[in-house]
Image 1 (tube, helix red, strand yellow):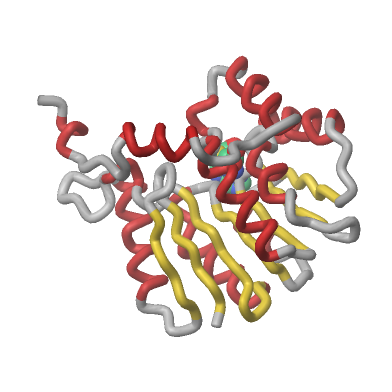
Image 2 (cartoon, protein in one colour; image 1 turned 90 degrees about the vertical axis):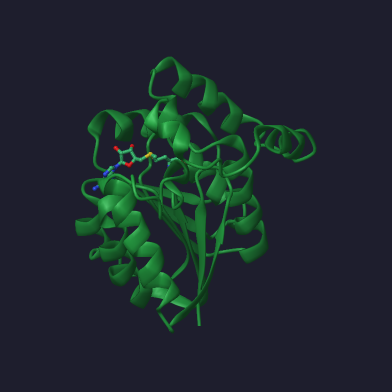
Length: 217
Ligand SMILES: C[S@@+](CC[C@H](N)C(=O)[O-])C[C@H]1O[C@@H](n2cnc3c(N)ncnc32)[C@H](O)[C@@H]1O
């Protein structure tokens, strides 16, 4: 038997299909980005539609003034996150891969927004230090080994009551499993660190590949 089949399913595909069917999934230009990303052959890295809608719902609820995304890829998550921004709001997004950065830049110019998108090229951990803002909503979705380090750099910049959403936190069901791989072990350590951190409240949600939903006390 293939070793990966030992890992537990995070959600049942049948139930996920039901949830998709009766949820508002991303619309308009955001859907176009999904199709454009599929052409690149790298769409595995794209946040799922259900997660995209979850990011939008969070943003609509929080009504953030400043958002930060680590790991832009083709800009899909950026636009999902930005849906709750008002006209004076801004979203920073950081990407280290130049090809991804350029694709996202192209997508951002093809859509009209009434908010500001600050598209940054470089290593997320390095560039966090340069963002001199109080942030309302953060989406961590870049290098999985860096989550803990980035969380510690980000927490002082997050406003009280602000939200961090960390993606891929269940690592295809591998976290906590004896056959977990290196990246999954880093994510496991991150989850343990957050759970023990009395500066925050958190809940791990089995959405897509798992989201750690963290609120700063
Ligand atoms: C899973 S994809 C992001 C998906 C995107 N957030 C979305 O919702 O569609 C991860 C991205 O992070 C980028 N990345 C990986 N390590 C990085 C780092 N250290 N700094 C910045 N970006 C990084 C990758 O090149 C890739 O484009």
